[in-house]
Length: 191
Image (cartoon, helix red, strand yellow):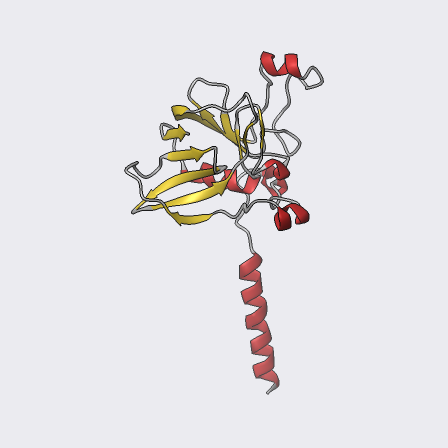
């Protein structure tokens, strides 16, 4: 009887460990990527759950479609499905649309605010090294020759909002996931 109880307990511990285990970090800072939004924002804010959704489209697998109105980013998987992510988008006057390609990908990228941003916000640093306090977050996915990026955020409560200067923000955990799934040269459609 005791052996059965002990074996059952060991199985339960193994099951719980497998549920809460996380893969090894790809970058030393990844342990700071956090889990997303605050407790209250998770309860009362828009859904930020990442997941596979039905998404009939003629675009090829690997294409990113950003719906600024829905505040969702869709990575086309093929067979009528896409991975859906919650995003933050450009605030009034900074929203944009168009078709571009991924031209670069960086882990924990440095941030150098453009001159236009520094004129609006002279309190910002002129350069910030990558890391947990950097507003670019855990990953940067560079779009064409523009100043726009798909990137993580050290302000996860901004996800689902229109607060950026045109970049597409994601939770750090979501941008790490997207980063691992996309390739340089992939098409990005912002609508």
